[in-house]
Image (cartoon, rainbow, N blue to C red):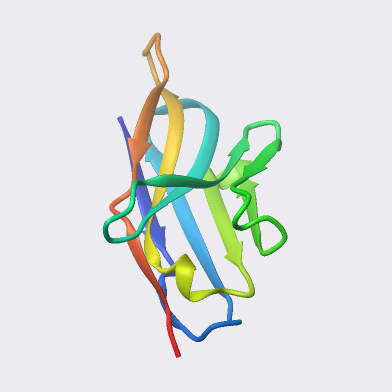
Length: 121
């Protein structure tokens, strides 16, 4: 199976920056896409950004121009550079990986444990 390890969360002032990392490991045959979701208290989990194996990206309207997702395919690692952070960005951020394990016929969604991002002065 596939395991995801997240890092990079923390406390930052409004206007500051953070960089999240997500490393996928295990019996991976292929990864179709990786992405970041977030969930704030009392809110639904929402897609923040995603990137396919070919490099195509997608962003939530609320983060366009401020966040950048990237991927190191050789390391099976995705990154989320978050700039100009706002208090409304405060949430638990979850890494997601859509991948096929070795000897599997299907792709599955795997999730990281989540990392807290708090934007406050």
